[in-house]
Length: 186
Length: 365
Image (tube, rainbow over all chains, first blue to last red; front, side, top):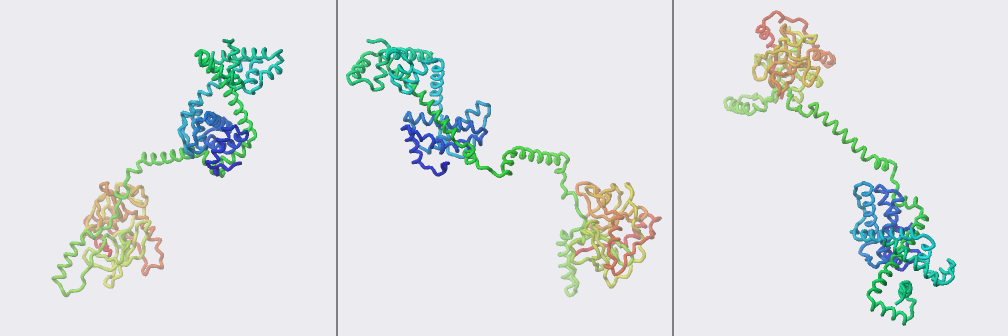
């Protein structure tokens, strides 16, 4: 267990740098360093461990997106940022449940409304895409994922799916993409 | 130029940087020349981005879930939420309940007190003990003393003013006087002055603060004997409505006061005393309350200030009880309570004439 109290700004910078560069181990250290604070926040305010997990992961996603977008500036401690986002998310979730309450703060806070708003939009896009892919069905879904996400070449795909030539595969991929677009925008 | 499929293939290759220099610049030129194609290209690029972002998010979620699954949640919980001692946890849990309960209890107590009129009683202002405070006439006395000094410059024996005045009455023929405890409470010395104006030195023999009773003894060489007392103590409880009277010293002269017994209990339901309806004033304290037949039924000790004619007298049977409690050894002479009443058939004025010789002004210094 890392010492939550001992971390410094340079540690924050390390984390951000790690996320920017896709360091494989970085998420784990982020998790270990910052999860306890959020856990305390949620459990102290009417949530359980699963709530804490959901809220923390959502906050991490927001942070991740922001860093990847290049718009994250480290003006305060990373802990403060994550705390503020989590607090905001948790209050929103409580409100949704019909619980109107306030959270007593033991940490500093930042205004994060904007970040959460843009996160909402990205979330919507994500859901749309997920839904579109689901409805796309097989083998299209796998072809699209293989090509765009797993970065397989058309040649690999051709072999994997047993098309007679690459052109056929390309044609199939093209059709799948058109259908996906239709589902996504329709 | 080409089919849409070819266009998109080329666009993707262009984005990925898979085109050679010539092809890339050709494609670029094509985009620059055709606004329609440019829009298509941008739309497609964004869509690809969208897919990629989706992929990234899925991967990230998976990663986070994996990390979480490998996490010892109990340990984090223990670390994040240090366990408080049992009593603290119970307090945290039932804090609200106990606070509510406490406030309800407080509210109930005070509203009950308020409803039952506890706060409307002003106890201190309604009850006064009836000793006469001489301080307010001290100025006069001082002025008089100054005069006397001037007139009889060489004569000694200038009296200091007394602090309190009250009444006492003879208990037995051998010089015991009864008065109330609050009168002689802080006494340095006590003097007893009879109706004829003769003053004797007295000594406190016995006090009983619970019944507010004090017994004095005359310790003066000049004093001989009272002779037979005309009155007796009534052994039984007196009846409400009985005609009673008292003689006391609210001023320098004996003052007669007449009334009736109005209640069997004293102030705030005090069973030790009667309530009598006799006009009394500070100085009456210690005066005997006699009935028609000349039996002492009580001893005046206090009155209620806000009620007219509500004076209180200690019941005679408690007086007798207190007298019986006096240890025999502490007495030089035995207190012999008079058993024979010689007043019974006399008129009120005759009774007073007889009685007043046995009533003393108690001066406390």
